[in-house]
Length: 419
Ligand code: HAM
Image (cartoon, rainbow, N blue to C red; front, top):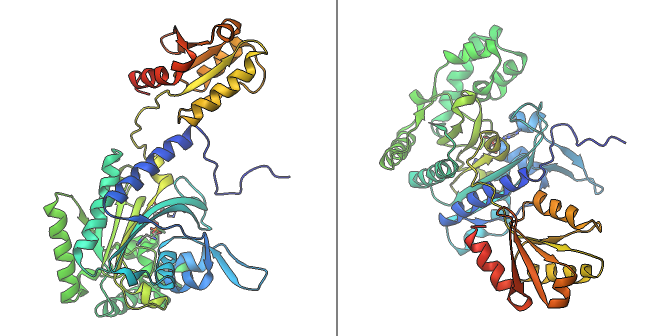
């Protein structure tokens, strides 16, 4: 049997998982202060949701989906992203009935069959928000500012790149111009891009192959093709970002790898990793809900790649020691230790005890290893006298605490020690 996790997947073990949890909790708390509420989605959808939502001509749909046929003969896919699933749920549960906008956030694993490398995995985790129902630039500005707040709260430096990919009015002319241009430079394009140049020219702009990059550098940009309303939308968004002093860079070649975008697209990039490593990305998708069978409903949002965030080194609030380890000296004390630990847990205090019948010395070592701030020692004297010995692990000081006062004293001591 192969005891390794599948290629491109990873286990996140303690204590790292504690750092992850803190970052996720901080992020989701921030989302809630902006009025977003959590939606919990299935990790698989009918394949069509992604094929129609993300777009047939995208790399994600063409090459990267984990698709399988279930026992009923239906084609299902592990979600490569969550926006299409959110839109599907929005339609299915008529979430517009209670009024717009609907503001949702989600977290969880996504699956893409990509070639694994640093920051790119087959199973990765995203945190994301979607603001559904507003066509206005202030909605784009809100999600962008929120995403920026997530990174500044973790003291992670990012570069914000934004662009407009136009709408149904103006994009077709740009796509045609791009197709013609690419046709003239076909010889320099990679095999994939030769196909993309015909089927979905915008996707060529994402290609990182050297020869293609050269062609892309001189390609027409969408800026020159934007219609009046798209230009106005972009101008208002930029004004709002300037009003809150959020620096950004306009990147006319930023198009993103998903077809559902209209007008605003953006990426928060890690300046240390160069232009192509996005820690978070998103944009406006005014046609997605309609595309999946709902009423036309404008929307905007973003997703944060948690693995990349953790690689970027978020500031951690110091792993403080907390809780209590209950040490039993002698066989007779074990029952009491079990009950004491239970009582503390019931009162909401992190408490643990020895499960391997170890010596008192080994139990003390265990208390140290587990990062406990205190230990409660129960020996023969304590049992006979109806008290506990409370030990401050880092100060190595001990005090006698009457049984009835344990909880109160511990709370006070934990408070004093900042745990
Ligand atoms: P995306 O650009 O495909 O957009 O992914 C968003 C973020 O997820 C990326 O910036 C990156 O940090 C992370 N990510 C993507 N693929 C991988 C991978 N293979 N391994 C590790 N991290 C990865 C979306 O998913 C859209 N749903 C964003 C959105 C929300 N647009 C509107 N609303």
